[in-house]
Image (tube, rainbow, N blue to C red; front, side, top):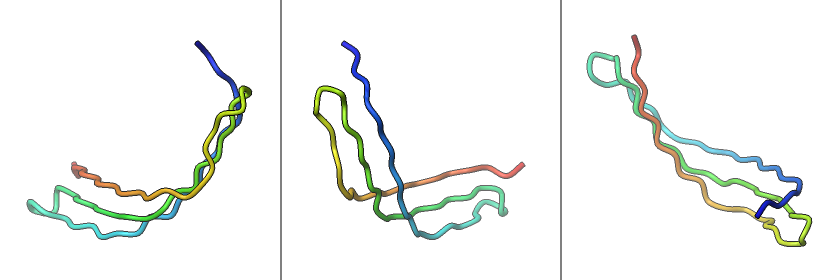
Length: 61
């Protein structure tokens, strides 16, 4: 079953980052909020603020 509709989101996250393991590995954590808004042609949808938590691990070459 397929549904169609318009959607958008925006958010703001703040956090900290650390370089570890001889400054080659980046670890970041953050928290914030996102606003989601979408409506399907059938009338169902979502609209509001929701919490956001992120964790990022990266490697520097």
